[in-house]
Every structure is written in structure tokens, then in C-alpha cells.
Image (tube, rainbow, N blue to C red; front, side):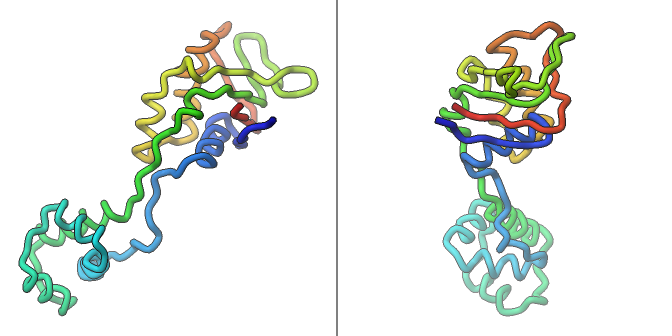
Length: 190
């Protein structure tokens, strides 16, 4: 039975496609796009989560002061208060990524596409050559997960870390390292 599959123009793109199909990536809520402090404050004070973000950012003002600010968009507030409102707004607007689940970190991967190690270059996952099979449970996922949680797991970073921290840990360096220089890859998780 086939498992989830990621596809992309590089190994890293295919890996990211697979991961994003399984867990929620860090992202910005589209409803949080206000630029002016007053609009941000209005939106924050409308929800419990927003009010908590204001408190977490260190905005400690009286209810009367808050009402004065909200009643007049041109009210002149100190810059440090505007900065606290902006910080709270940015914090509440970002939805954190889900942690990478164990079935991803412990899975068996089948990589199809152009794979090179030393002088051995072949299109894997075809009738003539089996996919490159990787046991991810032997890998080290800490760097990948840290980048994922920070919202900074680019295709290139994913590919580099997957090669160094997962492939090499499972099957070794290869003849002269591993290269994935093709233009189309699929990665199936089993």
C-alpha cells in the first residue's frame, strides 16, 4: 500500500511537499494584516487570545486608558506602547508549526529521481532502478525540526540536512557524497 508522497523539482522541495501534507507549517493568519497601531489594538482587544498577547508583551494600562486609545485613532500614545502593541499583534498573528510527528522521523522513505554518488548516477524509481530506500529512524532530526518550528525550513536546507543527518546516518557517505541534481523528485513515506 502506497503511503503519502511528496513531489518537487528538487529533493528538498519533494520532502517539504510531503511534510506539509502531513502537518501544519508555521504560518501567518491572513486576517492579521493591519499596519496602524490603532487597528492592531482594536483587533487584539476583540479576542481573549489577543488580550493575552497584549499582556504577554507587557502592555499594562488601565481600562480607562485602553478605552481612550480605542475611541480615537489619532490619540497620541508613546512609541514604546506602539511597539508593545505591534509585538503582541505579530505574536498572535503567527500560528506555530506542529512538531514533526514520529511517523515522519521514523518512516521508511523511497526516493525517486536522479541520484548520484561518485561515478554512479542513475534515475531511481524506474523500471531499471529501484528507488533509493532510506530508514529515517537512524537519522538525526533535531536541526530539521528546529528549522521547521522556526518557519525557516527551506527546500535547500531540508535537502542538505536530510542528506547529512538522515541519508548518511542510514547508509553512509556513498562513494563521494550524495547529490540530487535532477529536476523532478518524488518521496514516498512507507
